[in-house]
Each structure stands twice: as C-alpha cells, then as structure tokens.
Length: 161
Image (cartoon, rainbow, N blue to C red; front, top):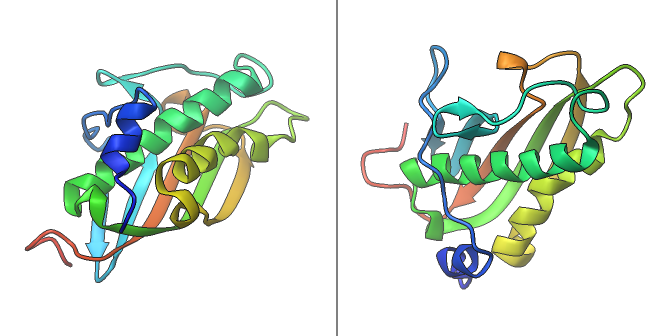
C-alpha cells in the first residue's frame, strides 16, 4: 500500500490507543485469510467508557460523531494487533450502531465520524460499504459502537485462523 498510515495519523495529531480488553467471551480482532474482522468498538479512554447515553438525548449528534471517530481509532488498533496496519489495502465494511433517543434519525451523520477518518487515513482505500443502525441501547450504555472489516496484503505470521 502506498499510503503511510502512521505518518497520516501523526499529521492529524492522532495515535492508536491500546487495544481494549474484551468485555465478554470474544477477541478484539480475527484475521481470516486476507481479511481482518474487528469486534464492535465502543469509545474507551484508559479502560473507561468515554461517555454514556443516547444520541439525541444525553449526547449531541456532534459529540457522537467525535466518539464514532474514537471508535474507529480503536478498531484500527485492533487491526494492528493481528495484521500490520501498513498492510491494509482496503477498508471493506463499516457497521455503526448508534444508541438513539426516540425520534432520532441521523445515525448516518454520527457514523460519518468513523467513515471520514478512514478516508483521511487511507485515501481511496478508506472508502467502504457501510450500515448505520439505530438501536435502543448498547453495551455499558455506550452512545456508539463501530465494527469494521478490512482487507490486508499480509497477516502477521501465526495469526491466520
């Protein structure tokens, strides 16, 4: 891949967080062939949920979009734990879940926080298929959760399942 994703992270003033330990019986990411499937990531900072509540009630759509971006960074950290981040050749699919107050219908705008970050970091290879889903409540009362699938040129040795 011709994009220096770590350099782009630095230019944007961003860094990958530590991979959050799973909150259940799963792993943060699994590499299968040339694809990495990342479990849903909620906005965590130093092992704690950054914010709680429903979008359109306790959390503004603008803040939720920022949290979506934070989730995207966590998803990339999970990718990096099983395949070198530099080996990403395509962000394939993004699914965003938005804990929505009754009547809130701007889920797509919230998930744009993640989508826009992938394009900023990977250019055209960051463009992806996507679903933005409104839900009543998410684990730990998180406002947003992002899961991704990426294609990589090479998994880390021993990480293919």
